[in-house]
Amino acid sequence: MTTRRLPWGVFAVLAVLGLLMLGPVLAPHSPEAVDLSQRLHGPSAQHWLGTDNLGRDLLSRVLTGAQITVGLSLLALALSILIGVPLGLLSGWIGGRFDWAVMRVVDTFIALPDYIVAIILSGLLGPGFVNMLIAILVVKWVGYTRLTRSLVMQEKHRDYLMISTLAGGSTGRVLRQHMVPHIVGPTLALATMDIGKVILLVASLSFIGMGVQPPSPEWGAMLNDGRAYFAQAPQLMIIPGLAIFVVVALASWLGDQLMRRHTISADDERIAHVLA
Image (cartoon, rainbow, N blue to C red):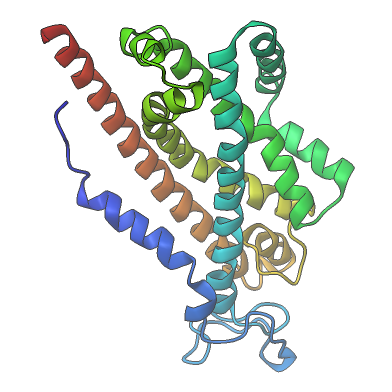
């Protein structure tokens, strides 16, 4: 298999996403410090992006909100992978009634729109960080289960797996040494593509009051807070909206690059297998 280097843009995007996690460290002011004498001020030397309706520094809130919005999205994706991948691995490998039962649950959730299910669950569980995380997990684990199961089904009947099993390799060892390497690439590519979707889901739930609650500077909650003051201070909605747009666009581009690289690598593997 030929090796292909990742474009420099991929590392630049990863660096930007990593830098967002340092938002509270980079914030020049406390994101929750109220100063009514400074409310709804425009950009100045003291407040580069202005202040909100309570006189809080908008730049500090956007930087701190990055850790909440992006961090919560990454946590939700990580937990979805930890649930979905092992379940898909076992479903594809074991097969039979277990596989049938898992796939019926997966098909049921995939048939329903993610946003609708998340909104319904958030409404039933109530607003808050933990409840929103549970709602996102419920709608996101199924994609990784289905992907992993399909990859296992493609590989499980290959000759090298049969040889490894006949040579005395345990099921755990066969899965760990031979199946997991085939799963890592597609799973990471799908997760990167999902970052933008989950960020939008987190911001949407917070915007309608079912996610992270004020005074936490979550980007969706900031959009909701700024609606009443759009005519007087449009930056209260424009700035967090731009932050969401830019991060989602970068994450989508990154996912597209990784997906293309995985597709090219898979094609190279098939060509090498045919020529061998």
